[in-house]
Length: 134
Length: 67
Image 1 (cartoon, each protein chain N blue to C red):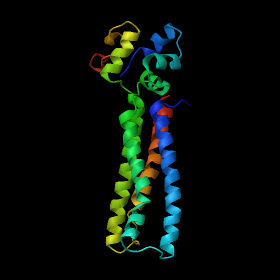
Image 2 (cartoon, one colour; image 1 turned 180 degrees about the vertical axis):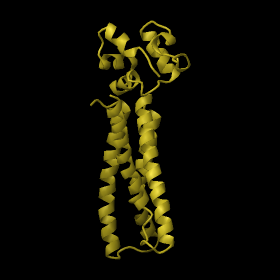
Image 3 (cartoon, rainbow over the protein chains, first blue to last red; image 1 turned 120 degrees about the vertical axis):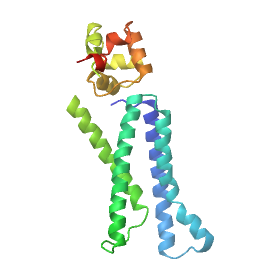
Image 4 (cartoon, rainbow over the protein chains, first blue to last red; image 1 turned 180 degrees about the horizontal axis):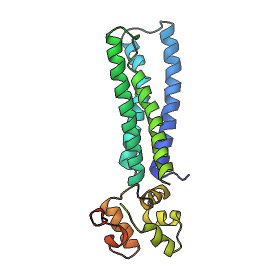
């Protein structure tokens, strides 16, 4: 499979962000688990792992802006729509169930994880549509 | 939208990859257009028609005239 130049940049950026995420998350968790940080520094460190995750969304936006192949762009838009539908629906269901004390509290960063899982589901939907029409 | 892209490409003995390179799009895009599961934008449709030295309506079948 050949990657478009925009896809190659997208892949490279995602890999860099994933490495930064892993490099930041482990020491931050270690520091918090041992209660070694407090005050403003705790807030600054606490937000650090969120930055590369936010970067993933920016990278997806950059890809959509840079991809010159309209069909490939449409595929990612469809993937993102599936991801958004899954994440928002799950969050809504969970929110009501949590509000009625039927399920435990879920941390907010669970929803981006569900969204990224939705991207995988969207890729599956794309593959299914491609295979059916081929 | 139905089209004659596969026939036109076949007449010239071009592969999907070759056509994709001429149009500066992916092979996936060519395949999606040929099989009718993706309708190209107007600029891309013009580019395709111009590549074959034809008018757009000679490449793409108007949905309103298909019936």
